[in-house]
Length: 306
Ligand SMILES: [Zn+2]
Image 1: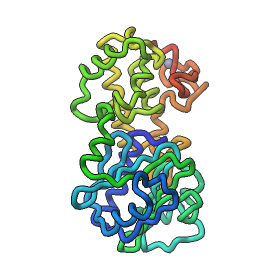
Image 2: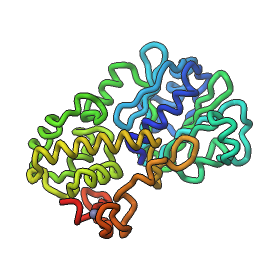
Image 3: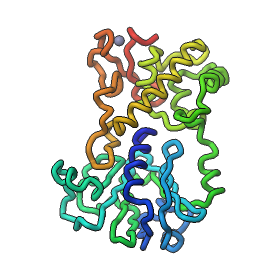
Image 4: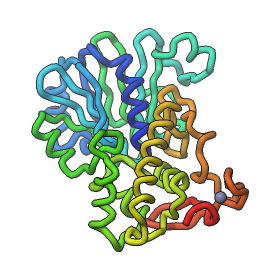
């Protein structure tokens, strides 16, 4: 599942090509993708909309149109967004060959679940929605497991959609005290259960939770009530540092994420624990452990983290 840095990366790259584009048509292949609107109503209401800006709230990508409507997009587990410029005819197999990418880096932009459909002819059998723009370019929304969604919303509906989203960890309001208060409110939860709760803090998923805990030298399984204020401060700093570095490196390649040109994200060499089970800890050399906790694979060094 793409996490905050990955959605931020997709947002930044799509912003380079989508702004000012006008939707010529929207073709819907799976009705639930655009619910609650019916597919004909969705197509009718998105026709002629002009993209004015892109933003992100937690893991929701928002494409704003001129006026008061927006598209809110959630990739969930297996969603992909693939932009194909008009200049390149749809080949039988889209190539992410490095030479082609370096010549025309904005001709194909793809982000999300990195299965083989991402690099095949579009539309693929998992395409749920296609936008065609008036300049002949296309944006494909592919989704193997069909949990993702694309909703046309007005300002108040967008507020409703994001009302239950917790504090944005890269905003100024995510202070030490905010995190300390959250820990106080849920003394019986573990650190990981708190960090992964999207209604408390928005956009931290499994990768960045485990990485932030490692940097803060706190076990993800530690009880909230057993965490001191100075440790919570260190944890907050670690969360912000990990997210910022990942955005700078354009995200992390995991099973469910590639950056928008189809290449793995550049944060991988910076991972300390995630995906490094049984490899030596970069600090103490002890093998990284993996257990299941809070429903997710949880990685840590039990010598460095307490
Ligand atoms: Zn260690």
